[in-house]
Length: 318
Image (cartoon, rainbow, N blue to C red; front, side, top):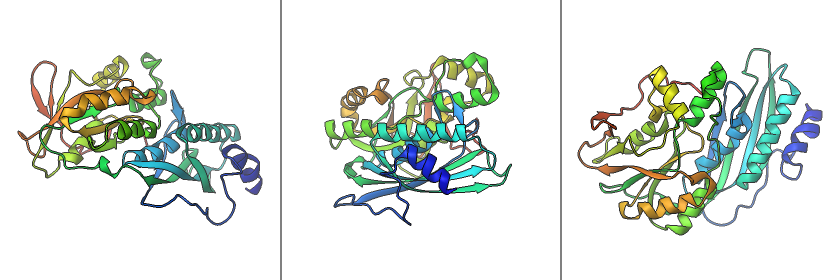
């Protein structure tokens, strides 16, 4: 174990970052900090556009970013199944290092455990993240007239993972959207101060679940325009074939944002100036007609409710 930590993990993630003491001693600076943790399990470990290591870093970075924090430090705990191929572990660690470097964060502490054969799906990863709160104004009072935005196409991650798992050849070319959102959030906060009222990454449960959490027991509703939100043809095809609503499919590089309706175009422009926001657009609005509900205006002119998921999410991606 010591040989693996020194010769592989610290060698890749960085001996200057991974400290061998009982904890990392950090100096994030004055003011409030944001702290989050998450665990990652995915089958297969490698999928088009990413892998479990990239997923772990970006997922934790995004949980900090949507709160208005500047992500700084991550921890990395690895649960390894006996017999895991060391070549696969090396690729996962290298992916984590690339993702951390791109997001501008450091992996500063960690832990490694090994479980018996068959007790894990190869590897599980737990990450925790710390960031400095820079933009607390990213939480405000939502009201009718506000706009709902997204930074790009929905459902890419969930469908890409499912397609790889089940070897669906007709989705060839579709990539997971796994990406960090901190650079996008920083651009919006600096270019459009005071305009954002809410932001959350649309991971498990997708866009519809995020919006249901926003409107639950509130005096307002959220209405989405089906014709306005971007969905790739591959995602439409798989979801149509399996009877899945793309708005419930998981994403790993998309966020739902609620903002002042009068400044929505300004925010969309700011998002489009970043790599992760090239396809940003307005997908709906906040209204008062159906308090506590999420409504979809379909392309054929009808309306239907998008309730909170009551059963197991499909496709299950973690």
